[in-house]
Length: 100
Image (cartoon, rainbow, N blue to C red; front, side, top):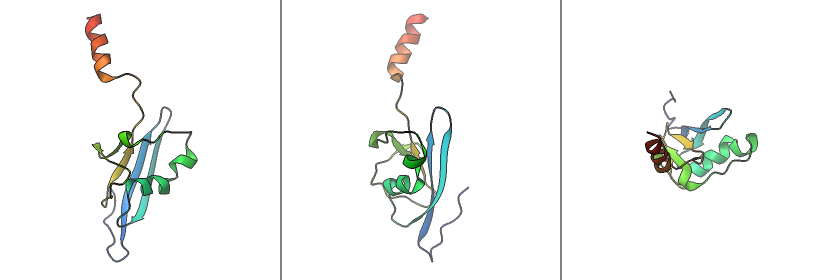
């Protein structure tokens, strides 16, 4: 669980997470009030420590709810970066239905 914000310091705590095929990246951060999703990703070091990963606005979330790069973070938020789907879920259901 993330700790409460320190109002005197103007700092919030947040996490950046990304599930990759062979490992999970998790970084806990302290950021200034008003920090955005984009700032959290940059501060996390994900781009520097991981293999090339495309971070697109349509694959970002905060606690599984869609977010944009300019979304302002709240204390305790978890920024989630999603991988592209290998198969469209609708297409996968169609394939399973054909087999049955």
